[in-house]
Length: 358
Ligand SMILES: [Zn+2]
Ligand SMILES: [Zn+2]
Image (tube, rainbow, N blue to C red):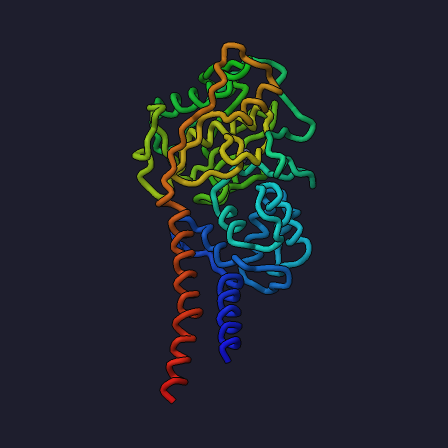
């Protein structure tokens, strides 16, 4: 009899920790609507007709993991499993091929819209962890580049602050290389144009509202950099910005995203190095503006080395682990622990007590 209860307890423990995989609906359940994907944790091959998988498929297709389609189904089939495996390889996660919690946790972190996979070829190096280029390795044919930006009334950041933030973002890259940048007044004079745009904005890469995709930029020598105007962008003149910068859980640091997107404008793809500027995802309320060794190696391989550069890349990151996406994740873990405690300890105990009374 005892061994039966041990078996029963282990069965419930395993079941409750691995098979959430619930149909999910998109509603404003939190500051981050993409957290609805958390309900899909535990889905695996054969989990069919789980409402919500089609949304995740559409989302992953934006980054090249699945072919573009007008319609996606809710079936967890071999093609979807291959997409999950490729995502896990690129982000150096355990290659389980199922929607385990770590994978889905990373998928809901806001990210850059530039695809990780282009024409079926992944640009990221996964476990080899290093910078990447766009296919055919395009670069600018000159070392002095001009830029301008077009403010948007939906993004109420003063022009002078935008000027400072963008100037500093470009200088992160010029310091390490032989590149120089100068702001100009008109689009006609500019090699690079920065804009804040919403939803479908005419380049075939529509934005998706708050969080999800934050921005995208085109490879050399296109020169277009688009920020999603639906985000709660935060920016300050002071380089040593602190946590006070972020007054909302959904706040996104404009400078961090600008430094990343300028990397694309110059010819770098995504890196699997978690702390590098060219890592595709960035949490809300997080600041990542200093080039890492991987970013420096990448950009110097394209544009040469600035011998005056002191090579430091010990940047500071401001991240509050107790807020934002991580708080809901820890709440979910706590809820699983309590649930398992109930199943493993309380229920068998009650059963024994009932038998004992008889
Ligand atoms: Zn990117
Ligand atoms: Zn665009």
